[in-house]
Image (cartoon, rainbow over all chains, first blue to last red; front, side, top):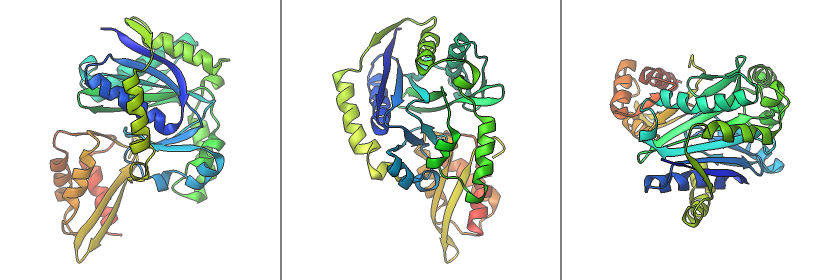
Length: 247
Length: 85
């Protein structure tokens, strides 16, 4: 079994989520398991499937700053995806390729990320449910869904982090404790840049090596059908108010 | 939740009956759409229902679905708190 690798590309928020879904559909229909790398242009906030968009995101601020907003089909929390500050990946394959147990499958895929980070001389650990930590601080967040016999896991590795910028677009439950919360997050989150001198491109190269290690793979593009379907989903689902304001 | 996950219930009741339930948060549930079933199960029940009965109903609605980062008991506790507000 050979993995298909889709090289890094940058897209807007709804297109990114639509590509992940279009690829999931093609995998369900018999297509190859796929590893995809991507970035967010413009920077964007993604919220978890069960989150309330109004409670989590300062929509007015996002609009003023040109920051995109999208609801993911995966659970988990709100993430600010800075264009410069992170590399995102998705792993899409039939469920049989992964452990049945959800935490075990997170552990397997997050292990590939830990392996990638070790290539940058960064020692990291998987922290259940869905995080990777370095010295007790989060460096990567991940989220998974399984539908139609297909497992999709996407996640980000923080290359550089600007917590103040993050909280300018994310809402906090209580405005009165916002400063304290920002301070706590600064203490609990790290980035590759805080650990080693490495560029975003270095992180991408390490992820490419770590994810493909001991796998048979080939580098390819999305098929015209996948692109067509992704454009359709970007418009009808991930770009729609009905989807994004579902909760 | 102790694991850092957040669960929030928005509940409306009228004449002693629950008329609307919306569950939000950063937990995981596979398959995700099961959340609609949980909300549906809890809609129409008496507002003064006991917490352990709510937990049973959540468990029944979940069936084989996997809730990660929270338990049916957490859902029941938070539901009760939301109803009594």
